[in-house]
Image 1 (cartoon, helix red, strand yellow):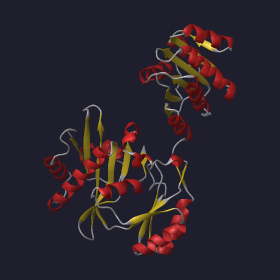
Image 2 (spheres, helix red, strand yellow):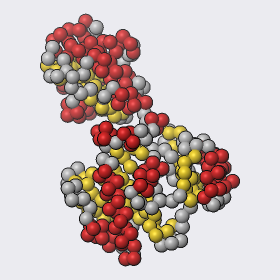
Image 3 (cartoon, one colour):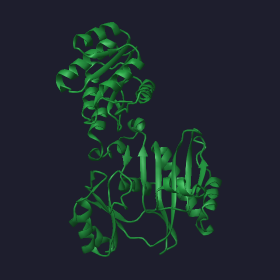
Image 4 (cartoon, one colour):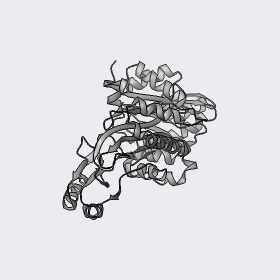
Length: 380
């Protein structure tokens, strides 16, 4: 789950990380009032859950309250990467002397969290990694011990931070680790962490957090921060039914039970010249109702030209899956061909139910993938 900048910075502030004064506004008039309270010169920042807001014109500096009102009105009328801007963050303008990147994420290869920092802050860290990777300092963190003082000092030295700011940087780095660990985050990021020219102090000018969905049951307060307006409706619906769904750019919809089998199915589809339209795992024990919901979610994607069902019936009975598919067909009335591979518990009964409905069936995954590619009209 992604958090907005204003939500992330609010959490940072609770952990003692300095942030600018500011508030969120939903209208231009609100933005004007906040700018007046902050003294006039402010930054108007669009609140959408995508990157590249600045390049898209979603971040503007206002010289006074009237200017803030006009700029807020402009930004609130924008769409950034197809997402409407419904809120803006009005922050006091800072005197930026130096911009630093500081973040923590999971390093799956090392099986540890990693703190990354760079003196080239204020731009996408991916761009820095691609063009000047030597500017990124990385320190792996033992999850049982946490970030150590010496590691924070090593980072400060590595990014050539002035020595008089090391103690302050050390505090911010340790508190950022606490934010990451105590909120079950998969990413926490300050970009940029600035040296303020007015007081030579460090300040988190921007913030980003991504929370592990699997841990939200431990964080009711964070779960309430989810912005459903910024989320694809299909993903919201999938989560409501307990489905793992990720939309992709292909034309062959995939419904599979089991994450590993789903990945294999997507690979086989690509092997035979197709492109998967989604990752969708219905999980074990999926009944007819859950399968019907999954099918409807797949068919909301207008790019889908065919649907491939690959079900291994262990916990999930194949006849239940077949009934779910037929129930969904009665409700949705799909106009795309469907290929079904059922193997396992009650597979014969499931295939019989589908054959009676004149659906395309297959016994092997290779056969199913080839039939789905052909049904989608793809020529290898």
